[in-house]
Length: 389
Image 1: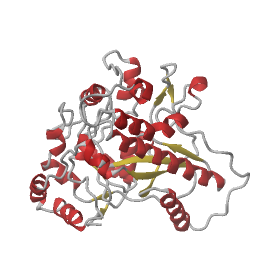
Image 2 (image 1 turned 135 degrees about the vertical axis):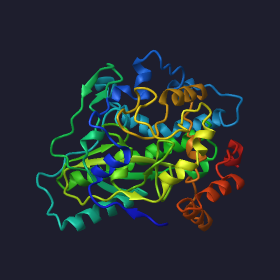
Image 3 (image 1 turned 90 degrees about the horizontal axis):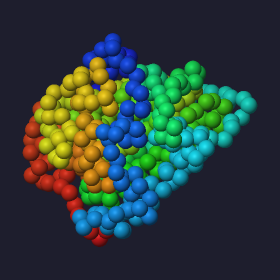
Image 4 (image 1 turned 180 degrees about the vertical axis):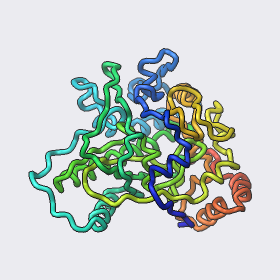
């Protein structure tokens, strides 16, 4: 779509240098992410946020985009992900896709398939991934640093040591684009439907791909937000760069994506990280930090000390203040994602003028692109009635 530079050498070493990862860096305990903290930390009060996803408990607002129609569609978009993810929660406490990986596969054959060359095997896996619905797919060698040290049970509130099987060698990263038009109505209950749809697509693609690999006789584990941190692995897999808003910026869909992953022992060729100018653009843009209502996105330079313990220490990056961010979500009773809506990379790239604009963003003329983005009112919030119409 536009010029990209592949990074030679080890993807692990590339992240070491990019984020200046210190020796003191440790794997993250999933208990401390902001959503799980809301289950046990009195400082993080979810109020009616979670219960609003049960339509019998929703509370409509006078604000546009928060009426019965809007909540009904948002909650419907989440229905499949919630039902499948919590299918065994009463007995096991598992929330698959969010605190635990999926266990929906049926058993594979007793023998493994005869594999073609490494290149052909990798090609077939990528071909199957896109056929199943992935917008982009990349592969990285498993980097244990991004696997959670512990997963968290929302039933017992216990953190248990998390270890993937020792045989797992690779992760297949899947990019699922979210609805561009719906993203224009964010923040609203209606806009929250784009997130729900993204997760439903992720569930389908990741579990189907894991079953395909299982059917070949190899081990495969489907995962969404659970088990490991998706963004650094997606960077290693050559699917995008890290943005000021703390999100993956992809060259095909910008930040308006969800990320799924499949862990496997299937021999595969890893991809290389890419650069296409995101870091340089984010250094001067600041549209996301300017637009954030609670100033949760840093205006300053990347730092190695996070705003609170819901983020990593000893890694130098832009870090969103998860406590401020989630408090705003709770106040609205829906997710926010203003930082996605206003991002100049959030575009419909089927349009030639948007492709041209991103070429500007990734050139010395990036400040002109930032000015044009404002002038043409890209990222402007649209009313819910605009989408319904």
